[in-house]
Every structure is written in structure tokens, then in C-alpha cells.
Length: 233
Image 1 (tube, one colour):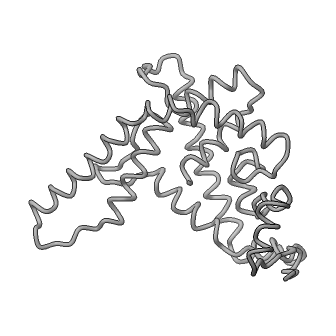
Image 2 (cartoon, one colour; image 1 turned 45 degrees about the vertical axis):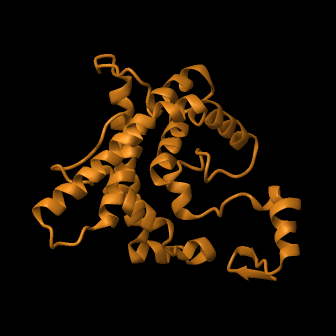
């Protein structure tokens, strides 16, 4: 079934035959993610791997990502990080049960802390906790980014009513979040690029991306876009 949602053409797949047609036979025509106000802004104009349309640029970025960032050596190299963060979470649970045995354990918060710790250490080389808690500045910014990804922007469907998004404050909210993300990424990149920064034994994601920027045709926006995806997903 075909629907026209404002300016957005939409196909509703309701049978196995059509699912095969869309996902297998015509997959290259349907594989790109929707072009929305939020995804365009936070991905630096679709400079990343996830939100970029299926084209030659996307294929090059994907090839680079798979061969250098998702290879077995990198995945195995970060295994100690994953194990340490799991032990940290188990330790937090044990401490809470020992001090407050009658209080329920907030597993949602602990799992958020676990994922945030793993992402930050593998991507940036360190945690970004605040006051010993399991969340920090980066986590809070990403939570807002995730919320914005599912918000309704009128202009995405009815461009001539795009002014409504400015009037409602949605564009200002998006711009504030993007500015916070961009500032955070610039600080991380500058810290890694600074010769005075002590070098770790293992490369993290940003180290690899900065090396690729020198060796390949990778822009700073590509670097930020890939970092964004690693944190968001």
C-alpha cells in the first residue's frame, strides 16, 4: 500500500512477498534511512555511516569502518574494557545490596551506566562519569539526542509549515543539542591530537579515526559523524 504523508512517500509492506521485494529484490532503493531535520543536523549533513544515503561515499565509509574499526583485532582488543565495566556494574550492585538491602536495584540506570562506560572507554579512552555516578555530561547529551531523533518536526512532512518548528522551539532545542555535541567532540579530538597528551597502550576509536584522516580522504565531519554513531547506537 502506498501512502503520501505530506511530502514523504511511504510504502506499507503487509505480505511476505512484498517484504522480499523490498528487502531483497529492491533493497538498494529502500535501504537509506529517512532524511529528517534531526538526522541531518546531528550527522553533520549525513557525513556518517548510519544516516548517509546509499551512494559511493557511504560505501567508502562503510568499507573503512568495517576494515579498521570493526575488525576482529579491534573487537578483541576492547574485550578487557567490556569485562571491567561489567565487573564495575556487579560491584555497584553488591555495594548497594550491602548498604541498603531493602532497597530495589535500579537496573535501568546501571545498564545505562554500563553501556555509557563501554562506549566512552572504547571510543574516547576514558569514562565521563560525574561525581562517581554512572552518568555524565556525554550520557546526558546523548539522551537528549535520542529523544530528538523521534520527535515530530512539521517541516519534515510539510516544508511550507517549517516555521512551526521554530515557533514551537523544536529547532532551538535541536540546535542547542547539536552545539553541545559538537563542542564535546571537538574537545575530545583536540585532546587526542595534542602531542602533550600521554599516549595509551591501546588505540581507541578516536585515535584510529585521526590516523585515517591523515591516510585517507576523511574529513573532520566524517570523524565526528562516526563518533556520534558509536555513542548513539
